[in-house]
Image 1 (tube, rainbow, N blue to C red):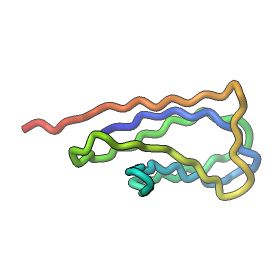
Image 2 (image 1 turned 90 degrees about the vertical axis):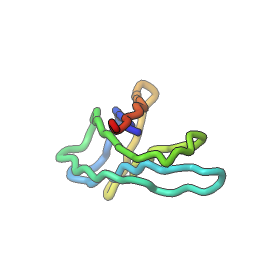
Image 3 (image 1 turned 180 degrees about the vertical axis):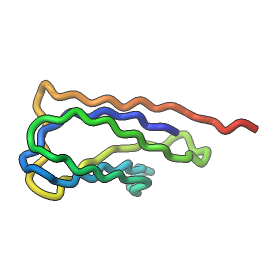
Image 4 (image 1 turned 45 degrees about the vertical axis):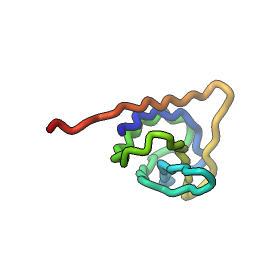
Length: 94
């Protein structure tokens, strides 16, 4: 499964690391299945694309969430900020 994401957000500090996490939700259990760390060279507004590629095990009734954690300062969104997440299934040829 390919998760093609675009996030729009504001960060308050320069040079922070932001960790984006793809989290699998199965009932009440949450498990991080992938993460990606990016360093931003300046504070302010950013529009950032990220792709997660996760191999699905056949259970198609799963839920996911994507979280972001910043190493310094705050990550903020405004009413006019947007995000996009597109799911594509990629199958291997046999």
